[in-house]
Length: 113
Image (cartoon, rainbow, N blue to C red; front, side, top):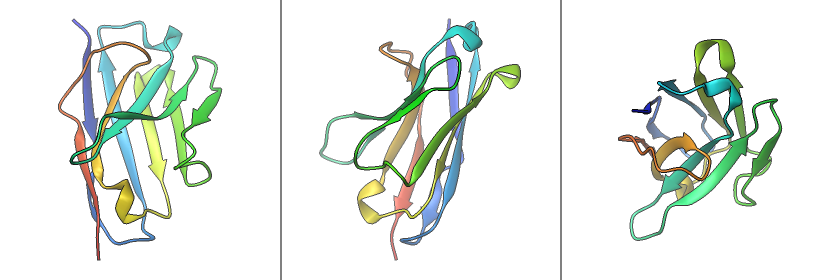
């Protein structure tokens, strides 16, 4: 079955940066629209960004201009560069094939002073 493994989360101060990675296996990664999601305590899971197979990206309004989604098809890896982090970005971050339900364990991002 599809396997997705997120990494790169951690504790960072407001205004700081992190880069998340997602290693994918058992899919034809290069043909898929991929997405990053997040879920904060007490809130529903939301789409943060998605990227098409040829690199077209779209972002939620809350992260536009601060986050950048990218992919390396040769490495079957999805990335999320997060800059100017805010406390409200605190959440567990997940990657997935867009509109699918291949959920992994996610990676925790905590933004706090």
